[in-house]
Length: 245
Image 1 (cartoon, rainbow, N blue to C red):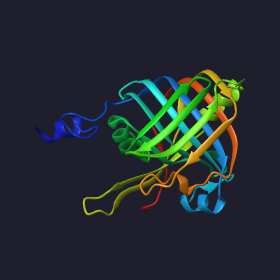
Image 2: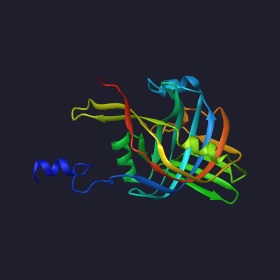
Image 3: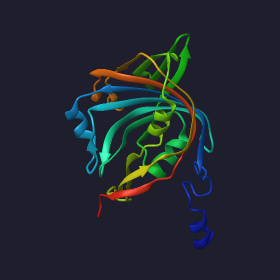
Image 4: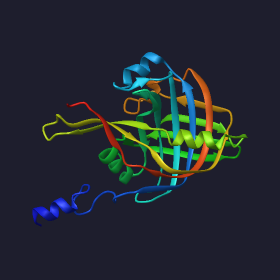
């Protein structure tokens, strides 16, 4: 294989059988349960990287069911998003993510810098309750519950929230272990079509775990719970800050 062909084919690893295909990445019938809670502001400031700034002392704990996503397949994800501001613009900082599918783990980390780790989340309906869980190995780390479709939510407000900017800390090491890439990346959801959105009573329980430390951002008060079904495209990102310059 000649160098020119290597450069032409070098989209993702491994070279001859990439873990994921090129985008765009479209998600159909993507289902969210997002429980927003108030947490400890000092603990939040300790994990939000500058130049991002903490907005309110809130955390959005998200359970996401993705049954049909181009290139990535059928999987479930969960994690914490912290509301922040960047240069006066409001958005969300993805603090941690856990999922059960290798292609979006590889693609998410390599392309955007999503903080993805392998675990076993779930989102399902149990009679009158929407139930989200996260298991890391045999240990239950998170349990979220919400009353099923109690009240219709404001669709326009939900679409605006999904289209807001999101921020990631992308880190790729050099072969000697030092950081080769350390960047703040901004991305957005595109072509968002909300098919339904509901609110209702919500509850969230987080348990301490050494390698899935979601409980380090403690639940002090539940603020809201929302259930969303939508189609959307995961837009590619742009670098807004380079920590190595």
